Image 1 (cartoon, rainbow, N blue to C red):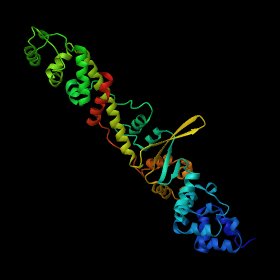
Image 2 (tube, rainbow, N blue to C red; image 1 turned 45 degrees about the vertical axis):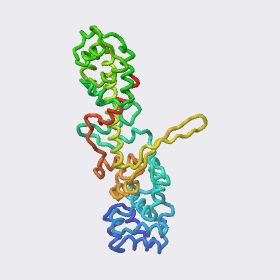
Image 3 (spheres, rainbow, N blue to C red; image 1 turned 120 degrees about the vertical axis):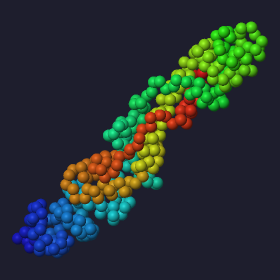
Image 4 (cartoon, rainbow, N blue to C red; image 1 turned 180 degrees about the vertical axis):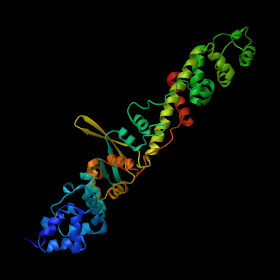
Amino acid sequence: MGKLDQFLEWFHDGRESEYDKILKVFQTTRRFLQAVIKYGEKDQIDIGYIPHKEWRNDGDLFDFIAENGFLDNVDYNSLGYEVKNYYLLWLIEKDKNIGLKYICDNILTDVVIRDDGFWLRLRDEEELADFFRRSGDYDLQDIAKQILGEDGLKYGWYSDTTDDVYRDVIEELNEKNIQYLANYILKNIGNNDLNISDYNSDFFEELQEIQARDGVFQITQDNVMSLIKDKEAMEELMDGDLGDLKSELYSIHHNAYNSSYETTIYNQVMEGLKEYFSSPIDDVVTKVGEKTKYTSYIKIDDFYGNVMTFIEENLGSGYSDSVLDYHGSYTGMMLQLFNEGTYDAIDFRIDDYPDHRELDQAINDYFGDYI
């Protein structure tokens, strides 16, 4: 029987009480392992049986184990749950770049290393919705998934967006679209006799006097711009000879309001992503033969800090979800940290209305398509 057989039996028993018998003799795990080396029993050691407390008690224990060959025939996948995070911590602290590259190449394989940092390769852009809060007045995760998806926002579409299209559309038009509107008016009613009895506006009364017409007036190139500036006159025309224009303006406002609201929410989502990412989404196009492939990436703001937080939070844990390979992705790792309350998921208050600047822009963008 070898000199260490009893100690090795206690070592591989797995019970803390048996391991304590070893420590009563050797005081530390390091001294026990030195004896193992001395008597040529190194191959009998499975470092997975070293208790969690011993790794904590001796911060350099992994260095000693590595330097003395206990890891020669060991890789990350062969280690137990309790040891894996210690192994990665040792690997990163030994050489940060090598350690993080090992994790990207072998464990979190959705992370790509570029010259400027670590980039998350997305299954699709909707994956980023996982970084948002799920509870509260609004399910931000669901809203972000809609915004980042191909179909766009399904939530929050408004039906009655205005009760005053002159104020909310015409008054917001830029010079180019004012000219479009003028051309539309001239095309539809320009130089036609309009009955003064159908209208009450002072604008038309004055126009009739200027034109010296009996019971009628005309909208011409000379007065159409003045007409557009007169709200009362325009509203009377839109209730009369320009009835179709009113309908078109309502459609413009409805579509502009809802599309700009979606843009507002999109901007909030993208602003929220800055909490964990430091770039816009980067769509990379590659061609394989005649096929075109689109892959989306986004730069992770603090990959090193996120990984170290996960490892340190789970040191010595024996649960399957306490190791990176259980999750297999950066997103999965972060979800675990959100669920444990280590990090906060992205949160913000959904705006009730579109950004006014976005709405004005949308109105002017849509105008030429309708008028």
